Length: 224
Image (cartoon, rainbow, N blue to C red; front, side):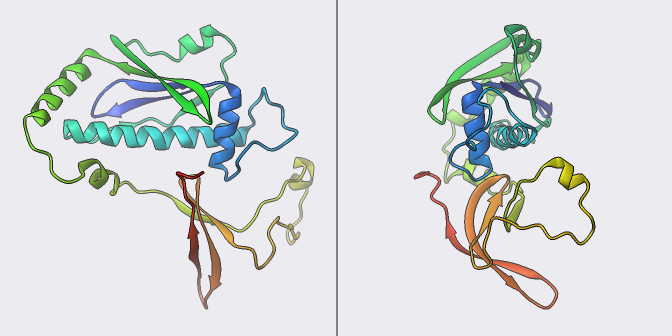
């Protein structure tokens, strides 16, 4: 499968991630808070939820890369929403490429599976980056500039009370007032997500006019 984004403001070019279906399904499962894909699913296909989760992962990764690039160029860089598609042939993969003068590639591991990250770089981008790096190399950099930049990036945070699965026929015909049972008990901790990534667990607290979530455990992403 392939996922691509393009730079829309600040610079031109883009990035494409190519990965086997197995790695894509594992990545999607991790983004949805599971260690592995659900048993019984077809290992050679991706459903809409999995494609959406992969797109979210690509969006997070490329937003961070764009912010890092913008730090060196001293310019804000925007990217397009990810274009995620299953590639049936090499012609499908070629169709995702843009007409740029330079290409860099690097092998990356996703859930232990070898994938390929391709960066499409026009000549003007190469020239600007070379000048920026030359300027930085001649000056002393103090602190952690990348951490400072990433610290200002807004992220979406939400709490999930539980999940369930049902046939679409039941969902379409569901009347108002129908009770849907979730997979969590009333005293179970709830899951907290940050931009699609399972980040922490906590407890729901109710007040007169709103609800809060008390974080009890932040997941160790390195250990995971």
